[in-house]
Length: 445
Image (cartoon, rainbow, N blue to C red):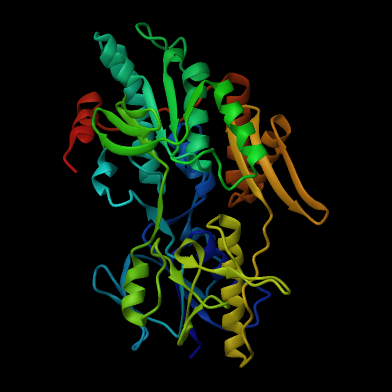
């Protein structure tokens, strides 16, 4: 029988590992089972575009079965792994089914972290899945609808004040796009309100936005946000979130931000599967719940198990350099997937596995129309720029890395249409309107 490889999760890391193990250039003859909680691979860097009605869901997602339809050695399953037994080499699904493996790659990703205040999730949804994007889009659009019917000026102001918590790439992109929607997309469509009077607040507990970027680019991003009309609050720590708004603590004292639409982009925690893996293998978890892996991405005393992507607390081992932490970004997950697949082939051939080496190609973040920041690593040194040129670079880079020609074509056409018309065609919400949205927002945690 051919060795059985089980891959848990079809994000960037899991997808790349499955492709590497079953591609024409792979020397290992294995059968791969790929299991995921959803039936699609999601291009997460553009998820905020679905949340802000810029793109439809099929434009940034692809059915997993379709991606592997021509690879007979890949079996795709829809299911959620809840436990792992390293002794019997089995993984148990939520419905009780068992999956057997000879080699295991865990790429379960990450989820939201509310720093111990999970009750905030009801009032401030995060952005990790398509369901999250649909919910945020629903809340944003229905806030404007409710403001159109609101007679009380204070109530109307609260409905038209949008608070984004966390000034990483997701928070910056969301805040900038919300400001563009209010200023360019919605004006002229309402009779009792002027959407241009909407107020977008970006709340960050640190001293600057995009802290992974160089300080000069971080300041440039803040300036571009201000030009779009986004108010940036730095050194502001969130102390409470409820259905009526957000409480923050600043150097000047506590402050209340009245808002009926709050989005959480501040914290990330590893998948709960990390704890299950720790119970099964005795592996170590870091403070964020990520699995501490060996240099070759395997677990200590369990070389048949590898952990990649956002779930792995991995280090890059470049020759002649001290090991350094690997960031939780999609290029790193892809590289881990290829490394894990290559090491399985080496084990099957009786060869020594190789340490993971991360090649950092830089960071990108878009703020809005004609506004972005780019930090690239080149052989000649860092290349950093912002503004219109950075925006064009960001746009074409994201189109290039989308899965499938159709998605690339559709996204490019949608963006071209939005560029010339300021229109966002995905502004449709399902359900029963304002009453249902009110009940969801007021639901107990």
